[in-house]
Length: 117
Length: 111
Image 1 (tube, rainbow over the protein chains, first blue to last red):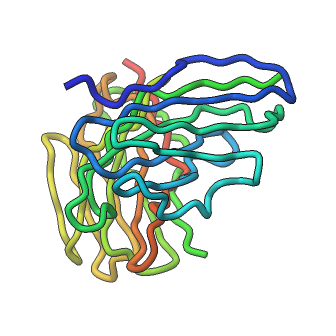
Image 2: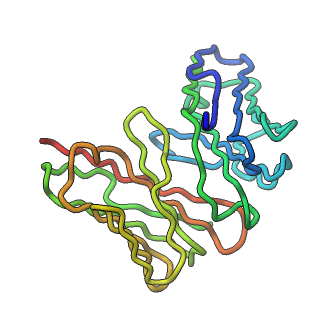
């Protein structure tokens, strides 16, 4: 099992640029989560998909952030335009939901370390 | 909104000493999960507690869920250098979809 795959692993960009983070969940998992981790705020849930449908995006910081899941094996998190305060590690996680997804083990990807200059 | 508080924020122990981290929620949790994150790594699931008063053990790790389902603890007996990392608790609300992570307790073990 390859686990959750994220790309890129590191991204350095300049303020104002568009950033796209990618995630491939574990095959067969039907729930996908995007998290952001910083020293100040810890681990924050940004958005949650179940069966490719966004269920809860209340954690998305603002309109500059958007996430899509066009199919069961791929999701993107886009930041446009990026700002220095977006610098963080972004994790994608997936789970195999039997009860609506909320109590199942989450498997995290290795993360994307984003630096916005 | 619901918050999951974790204490202490940091703990430095000598190898062989015990370690405990505590997790407290302002509201009742349907269940609680614990994760470990090694430095530079990603969170890895350790265990899930569901029942009031539940106690589970994994080798030297003991996990407890409070009777009121508002608090939890992780105790490590005789720490080893391999225990180094940040331990997170994460609670699901009884309603809604948010999994709220605590800020974590960073454990440093020196030989």
